Length: 218
Image 1 (tube, rainbow, N blue to C red):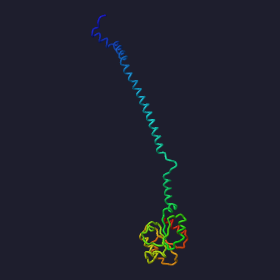
Image 2: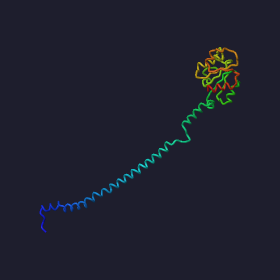
Image 3: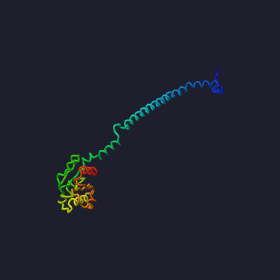
Image 4: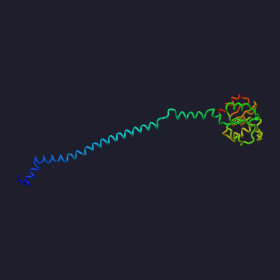
């Protein structure tokens, strides 16, 4: 067989038969290399998708579980009810009985109302015959002070006895409740002390009236 001339070789290479043969060889060689990387690429895509899906699912599930545990309210507790209950306890008469200090200033040391209040639960109720100093502990610590207008105030030389003492107590301790009482049915109904003090009543009034004033001002 004679050798092909250069012109004949080019004609054959770029002719129909040559192109077909070259294309077939290229497909065998390069087609496999192109297709092989596509397989791991698809595999990676599926793997990432599954991983992300599982991760997101697990994360969401864990987040939901955490949220439920954190924010689910306790059915046995209600902050509003607890606060309301605390306010009721603080303002209740029973609570006031444990902290309110009541003082009677009366020369009649066996004044029955004192014992009645103690029996009713007003545990910090006491009586002194007179006042030696406006700064003595019984005065300073008491929240409610009952003053008999007869027979007291003599230690401090008040000319109007109990009326003078009650007036001085109210001027010195305006935050305290000062109540005067008397066994006398007559007297100056326009005395200035009556306008200063918080209340007044007869000494022979029912003990319930004394207790009602205590509950009102405690």
